[in-house]
Amino acid sequence: MVSRRFVVLFMVLAMVLLAVAGAYNMLNRPAGEVSFTLTAEEFGYNQSNGAPTLRVKVGEKVTITIVNNGAETHETMVVTKETLALALDPTVAYGGEEGLDKALGHHIEPVFQGAATDEAEPGETSSMTFMANQPGNYVYGCFTDEPGIILHAFRGMWGEFRVES
Ligand SMILES: [Cu+2]
Image (cartoon, rainbow, N blue to C red; front, side, top):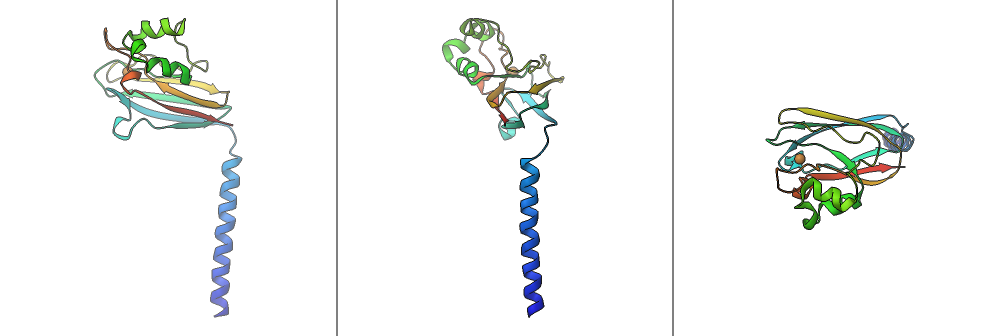
């Protein structure tokens, strides 16, 4: 009886220790490198699952790769939520890339240096690598347009990108 109680107590203690060690490890995870691979199609990323929220730690070197499984050209850029808000405004989105640049007052730019892929044609893969050196809540999205039509981001092709301190 006593020994069984001892075993149970020992197991509980071991679980508590493991949980504490796990939490410590997570909180103190050294900044390193992290990579994500997303499929791109009309009109979303990882469409069957919805665009995932990507989380990184400040200071990490981030690689995002898109695999274009769609029938149109796609890309990805990490931008501010303000830029996305403009892209989601129909009066802007229906003007395509040109309309967005006009609304921004300049050509669209990534929020981190290098945080944009080249355009990927159907069947192609394209990557970006950048340093996530500023904490905050950003978004990634496709800011190309269908010929003469609207921005892909407006069609739902975007997701959250969080840089946690
Ligand atoms: Cu696209």
